[in-house]
Image (cartoon, rainbow, N blue to C red; front, side):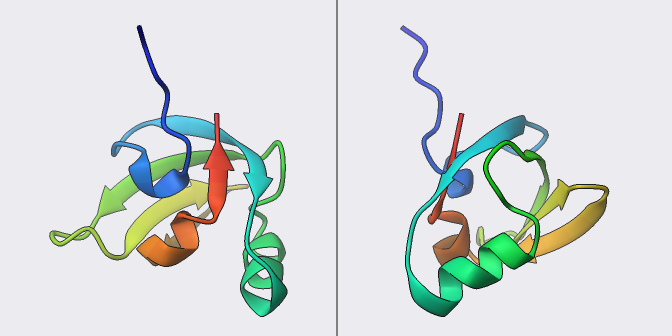
Length: 77
């Protein structure tokens, strides 16, 4: 049985996923949405730092660095 990752911080480098939902509240959620990580956006995980934080993703044609805590708020499918 293949179980796909549920949040962006669980996705392996080189994988492309689609945002299904952004959780969280307040300024953090708004910041994530403002960066273009909205429902339906395709996100490719490009790099991950040696200790796993931050990770670099490509979304809507530009590279973006996210902390693990931010990536954990982004549900993907």
